[in-house]
Picture 1 (cartoon, rainbow, N blue to C red):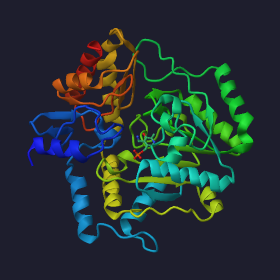
Picture 2: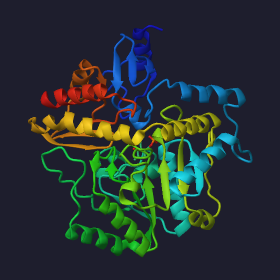
Picture 3: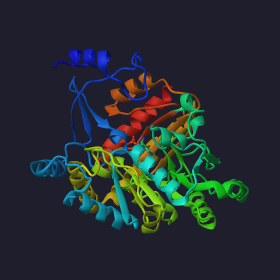
Picture 4: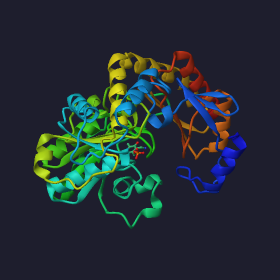
Amino acid sequence: MDADEVLRLDRAHVWHPYSAVSSGVPVHVVRRADGVRIVLDDGRALIDGMASWWAAVHGHNHPRLNRAVREQIEDMAHVMFGGLTHEPAVRLAERLAGMTGLGRVFLADSGSVAVEVAIKMAIQYSGRSTLMTVRGGYHGDTLGAMSVCDPVSGMHHLFTGMLPRHVFAPAPPDDYGRRPVRTAPEPDEAYLRELTDTVEARAAELAAIIVEPVVQGAGGMRFYHPAYLRRLRDLADEHGVLLIADEIATGFGRTGEMFGCDHAGIRPDIMCVGKALTGGYVTLAATLCTERVADRLGVLMHGPTYMGNPLACAVAGASLDLLAERPWREEVARIEAGLLDGLAPAVHAPGVRDVRVLGAIGVIETDRPVDVAKIQDIVMGHGVWLRPFGRLIYTMPPYACAPEEIDMITRAMTAAATAL
Ligand code: PMP
């Protein structure tokens, strides 16, 4: 099919994420994805600066991941999980349990569903139905997950009023100052007091506190100090409330530690993972919990059709093998250094509020919403694919990016920030 026909059918029938059918934002036809590049119909090979939404950490078309899919498909592509089990699922569950210290694994089919499952676990465990969530947080687009997002950050404001009401903890302090930084300053005592007071006032009704460890993703790409997370863990323990860590974006090395929680040295009671779990190949997520939580909550009424999908589990296993073999800590540290260095000049561009980098995440925040089509045009001219939103131009590249490729990304982002 030629590109014009793809675009005609796309315009005629297809929804795109977070858009109206007539949004007018340009759409590009992609033909292949190989290594860290996405190849468009016109032959342009763009560095995938988004790792296809945090997921493709090893790059695309990876021989090991391809082989895992090919070998698994010869045995079975899918069978129902109810009353049946198989090696790819149990191997993966054992692996995840070992990595997290959380012994029970529910294999869900997307990140949002993993969050729904976590919320249901917490409600059943505690017999309470209110959650505490954090201002600026984002946990997915299904109704339950939306209910623990911050409506103020704007993605779901249409649904305010029809979602379960939860309690909001104050957003972690995010005054980074005008210089490239790795994290926000440590929260001061007055701030931690406010957080403590908020939890204490509502503790008796709380089933759980849900939080994205050290980086709030789609709610604003805010970084915060690990001391905030440690305080949440302490408060949850003091009040007998569960702590849910949503590691869907931060898990598997993205922030420079295997999990965001590792920056704070804490273990949650429930953890959600997804995105990079399959290296960007097949949709799969998981909700993990302690044996204590699992034993007490009884029957968990959740069972997606594609639960434990063998293809997804097999490729997730291969992706975790690759992660274990690759020097990801050094790679992510090198990317962090490249992003800090390359994005530093953007701090001085008029209209830039700040620049922040943690692990393989680089963010330029501007003082007003960016023109998405214009920014994309500029970065594509530099051979890079990014998807800015709101006031953010940001990247979370594959760990497989070479230093020159990180330079290309930072040059593209800086050019975009300078042309605001
Ligand atoms: N939680 C976080 C922190 C996320 O970044 C996302 C994905 N944007 C989700 C949940 C939802 O995951 P999915 O898109 O796979 O439903």
